[in-house]
Length: 459
Image 1 (cartoon, rainbow, N blue to C red):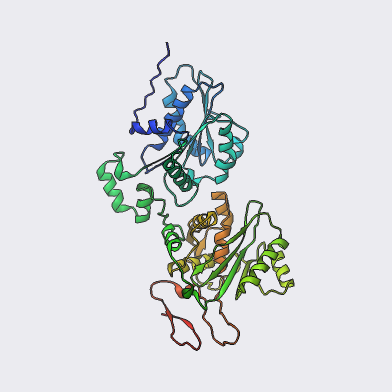
Image 2: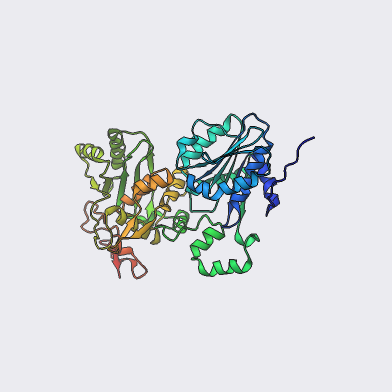
């Protein structure tokens, strides 16, 4: 006769576990204080108890190991206590069950600790704070040989791996793929918090925080994000007609890859339209220079701005070929020194103002999706002098596991104002200055003088 083990857990939402057990991969999006961690730990524990494979292996992964210990370890010990003969190993944060299955806690900050392992079941908690490579290069292969299961849980934090997994799961489920399911629980759809507390939070949280943390809105951004995702989404939905950009200068921005996983990007912009970028991997400087030269010959840009940090070889090669290019040091002095500590902060601020002014972004394809994610990722703050400081590129790579190469290339097209001076005309339309488009007190006005076609910026 089978032994009955009673776990001291009463699910707030019993139907959730049935849905999770019916699918191999599940993405669960829930508001703060929903009870995600307790739900996930008990889901994993049941999988381990019922595992019939030899030496079952189960993992709970949080963004940091210390975080995994603080939020999940007590729950795992508590809920596994009724299992006769279980062995708790505090040092390795593991629980060994009598059937040989082991549950262990890990931190995504140390991916090497997960390499070379196999898993029958994995919980990835707060996926939005994890690097993409953890899932794609480590966890997913570790599930393959034993057809293990994965549950992704978290609260939205903009556009990133978590939002992509949720949308993918929704799409696959709608298409009839039985492997995937997607669940979302907003605070106005559950009874996890008292109504009075929900009303208090609605009054006291900022609109973006309320939408993101409580309504599970992936399109909401944190208050310290420089470019809100709403702004990006609006720009992707706009349609820019040829007449809207006629006579405006054509500008190329070139971001050169720094490391093996980075991309080199050529971005073309004309006025309020950003064209689909050319994205390359594993090109040396000479090859990239040839690609840039080809774009110069095809589009005849009025300016070519290139990242000076890694692009010196590309710059030298293009100048040797007779092309005029402008090197831009990201860490160099800003054109508006009173407002920004460096050029990169200034360019990204200009990019935000360009989007506010009606900029149109590419809207189809993987590169467009990646651009949207990159644009809405960097945070900013003010330094002691009151200057706007953008999160450094290295910090973004460390936090997200990828560098915002495509967005940096677009930002480079705003490195400096550019005049378009076609042959035979002494005056031309001018590309805008970073601060000239700032705020509602400025208006974009096209003059009606057909003889010179000047675009003026007036306060």
